[in-house]
Amino acid sequence: MTLTQNNDEAARICRDALGAAPAEPFIGFVIPSGGAVIINDWSQRNAELTAVVSGPVPLRFAREVARYLFGQLGCARVSARARASNVACLKALALLGFQPEGVARAWFGDEDAILFGLLPGECRLLRNAA
Image 1 (cartoon, rainbow, N blue to C red):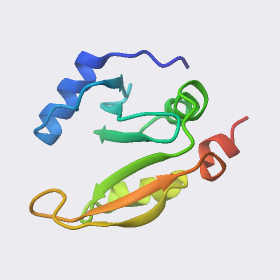
Image 2: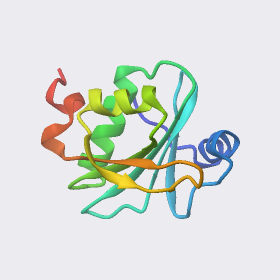
Image 3: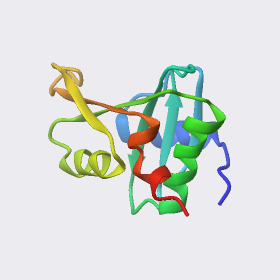
Image 4: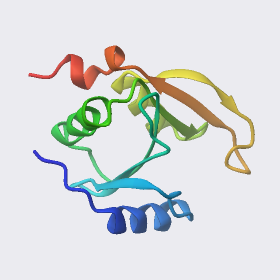
Protein backbone atom coordinates (compact mmCIF):
# COMPACT_ATOMS: atom_id res chain seq x y z
CA MET A 1 0.00 0.00 0.00
CA THR A 2 1.25 3.46 -0.84
CA LEU A 3 0.12 6.49 1.14
CA THR A 4 -1.52 9.18 -0.93
CA GLN A 5 -1.39 12.67 0.53
CA ASN A 6 -4.74 14.47 0.35
CA ASN A 7 -4.56 17.55 2.56
CA ASP A 8 -7.90 19.04 1.48
CA GLU A 9 -9.99 15.92 2.14
CA ALA A 10 -8.16 15.04 5.36
CA ALA A 11 -8.67 18.59 6.64
CA ARG A 12 -12.39 18.44 5.77
CA ILE A 13 -12.80 15.15 7.65
CA CYS A 14 -11.03 16.52 10.73
CA ARG A 15 -12.92 19.82 10.59
CA ASP A 16 -16.27 17.99 10.39
CA ALA A 17 -15.40 15.58 13.22
CA LEU A 18 -13.46 17.89 15.57
CA GLY A 19 -14.90 21.29 14.77
CA ALA A 20 -11.48 22.72 13.94
CA ALA A 21 -9.19 22.72 10.96
CA PRO A 22 -5.62 21.46 11.35
CA ALA A 23 -2.93 24.07 11.92
CA GLU A 24 -0.74 24.87 8.93
CA PRO A 25 1.53 23.43 7.75
CA PHE A 26 0.24 19.86 7.87
CA ILE A 27 0.30 16.61 5.95
CA GLY A 28 -3.01 14.80 5.55
CA PHE A 29 -3.87 11.23 4.60
CA VAL A 30 -7.36 9.77 4.17
CA ILE A 31 -7.95 6.38 5.82
CA PRO A 32 -9.44 4.01 3.21
CA SER A 33 -12.04 2.64 5.67
CA GLY A 34 -13.07 6.14 6.78
CA GLY A 35 -11.36 8.93 8.61
CA ALA A 36 -8.10 10.82 8.30
CA VAL A 37 -4.64 11.21 9.76
CA ILE A 38 -3.09 14.65 10.15
CA ILE A 39 0.61 15.17 10.84
CA ASN A 40 1.63 18.65 11.91
CA ASP A 41 4.22 20.53 13.88
CA TRP A 42 6.89 18.12 12.69
CA SER A 43 10.64 18.30 12.92
CA GLN A 44 13.34 15.66 13.18
CA ARG A 45 12.63 15.52 16.90
CA ASN A 46 8.85 15.20 16.98
CA ALA A 47 5.61 15.12 15.00
CA GLU A 48 2.11 15.73 16.31
CA LEU A 49 -0.39 13.11 15.17
CA THR A 50 -4.16 13.63 14.95
CA ALA A 51 -6.44 10.84 13.79
CA VAL A 52 -10.17 10.75 13.15
CA VAL A 53 -11.34 7.19 12.69
CA SER A 54 -14.79 6.09 11.53
CA GLY A 55 -14.05 2.42 10.88
CA PRO A 56 -11.33 -0.18 11.30
CA VAL A 57 -7.92 1.11 10.25
CA PRO A 58 -6.20 -1.30 7.87
CA LEU A 59 -2.96 -2.56 9.42
CA ARG A 60 -1.04 -1.84 6.22
CA PHE A 61 -2.22 1.78 6.25
CA ALA A 62 -1.18 2.27 9.90
CA ARG A 63 2.20 0.66 9.19
CA GLU A 64 2.78 2.99 6.22
CA VAL A 65 1.98 6.03 8.38
CA ALA A 66 4.51 4.81 10.96
CA ARG A 67 7.13 4.28 8.24
CA TYR A 68 6.42 7.75 6.88
CA LEU A 69 6.81 9.39 10.30
CA PHE A 70 9.96 7.57 11.40
CA GLY A 71 11.49 6.91 7.99
CA GLN A 72 10.64 9.63 5.51
CA LEU A 73 10.22 12.50 7.99
CA GLY A 74 12.98 11.13 10.22
CA CYS A 75 11.15 11.86 13.48
CA ALA A 76 12.72 10.68 16.72
CA ARG A 77 9.28 10.55 18.39
CA VAL A 78 5.58 11.02 17.71
CA SER A 79 3.19 12.76 20.08
CA ALA A 80 -0.56 12.26 20.34
CA ARG A 81 -3.32 13.28 22.69
CA ALA A 82 -6.76 11.91 23.32
CA ARG A 83 -9.81 12.86 25.32
CA ALA A 84 -9.67 11.15 28.69
CA SER A 85 -13.14 9.70 28.00
CA ASN A 86 -12.24 8.27 24.56
CA VAL A 87 -11.55 4.73 25.72
CA ALA A 88 -11.34 3.31 22.19
CA CYS A 89 -8.65 5.83 21.24
CA LEU A 90 -6.71 5.27 24.46
CA LYS A 91 -6.71 1.51 23.81
CA ALA A 92 -5.70 1.93 20.16
CA LEU A 93 -2.76 4.18 21.08
CA ALA A 94 -1.60 1.64 23.70
CA LEU A 95 -1.85 -1.22 21.18
CA LEU A 96 0.36 0.71 18.76
CA GLY A 97 2.98 1.16 21.49
CA PHE A 98 2.29 4.75 22.57
CA GLN A 99 3.23 5.42 26.19
CA PRO A 100 1.20 7.75 28.41
CA GLU A 101 3.27 10.81 29.34
CA GLY A 102 0.91 13.05 31.23
CA VAL A 103 -2.33 14.98 31.41
CA ALA A 104 -3.14 18.37 29.89
CA ARG A 105 -5.88 19.70 32.13
CA ALA A 106 -8.91 21.17 30.32
CA TRP A 107 -7.11 20.76 26.95
CA PHE A 108 -10.43 20.23 25.17
CA GLY A 109 -12.14 22.95 27.19
CA ASP A 110 -14.60 20.62 28.83
CA GLU A 111 -12.23 17.70 29.28
CA ASP A 112 -8.64 16.75 29.99
CA ALA A 113 -6.34 15.25 27.36
CA ILE A 114 -4.10 12.27 27.98
CA LEU A 115 -0.70 12.92 26.36
CA PHE A 116 1.15 10.07 24.65
CA GLY A 117 4.57 9.60 23.09
CA LEU A 118 5.96 6.95 20.77
CA LEU A 119 9.62 6.23 20.00
CA PRO A 120 10.66 4.18 16.95
CA GLY A 121 11.68 1.15 19.06
CA GLU A 122 8.29 1.14 20.80
CA CYS A 123 6.26 1.16 17.58
CA ARG A 124 4.69 -2.27 17.36
CA LEU A 125 3.80 -1.70 13.71
CA LEU A 126 7.48 -1.44 12.79
CA ARG A 127 8.67 -4.14 15.18
CA ASN A 128 6.19 -6.66 13.77
CA ALA A 129 6.60 -5.66 10.12
CA ALA A 130 7.12 -8.51 7.73
